[in-house]
Image (spheres, rainbow, N blue to C red):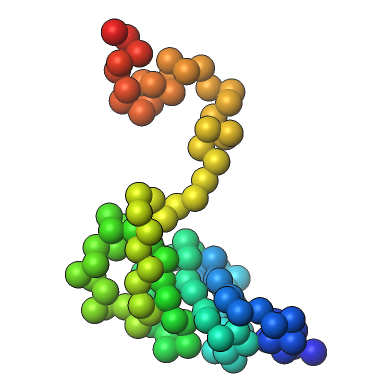
Length: 110
């Protein structure tokens, strides 16, 4: 069975692509419409320009609402940042003072 058939047979309701048109993309899979709702998230930060992708996840800074007219997808604008990460976890090895300097938080010097 093809990947699209597998996705469909599993009953996936929402299929999220994480790489858009970047290297190794599988946009051709999305064109087969294996899931009822297909979403672009994080990969490349612009429209896929494809009618078979329904929504684009972003925030109001990276994608101002007035830019929606240039997207084929409907915009799903989340509060704060669309980019989920484990910043605190990834920075455990960095001394708090160095992090404060990096982030421009000079209250650590008060």
